[in-house]
Image (tube, rainbow, N blue to C red; front, top):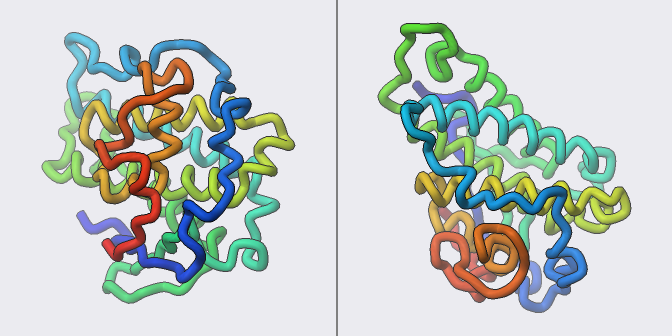
Length: 235
């Protein structure tokens, strides 16, 4: 069940370490912004009598649509000229096709690869069955993990490269709420590798402490620690 573009890899992009960059999205006046005060840590827990795969499928599809919508709000600013690489902190993501060939692409091209691939997956009855009696494939969980990894890349890019535009549109509360919900869901079901999320550990620590209700100290994504955002090894 190979899915189109196969995989992506990350490498250092040669820019200054993230610690030397000012991260506006970490400023307290912005991190406390939410569109709801609901406790997502409790919300993401698998309900009784709900099949795990059904729960993963429903939420993954919803996150895909929400991340796609969030990105669409700043897509006019994410151009090939402004975002010549898919960069987050000092990490650059590369897309690899189904043959393992590296595809040189800009950030908007990368996001298009992600959204097109995920769209094809979530509408494939053999992968995300919606009809009664259809079984989920044995590879379903691994596919969900791939989707979550790519959606994380998109969210991280929005924060790193387009937070000013998001702030100008007064949509930072929506972005923070989506990020918290997504990260806590992924953490609940071990859908993201800590090595992949390390680039945003400082933000995760601030936003997701206390069940995602507010700022302050707490654990980073996957326990990577607040200093892990400077990692840029290929993976």
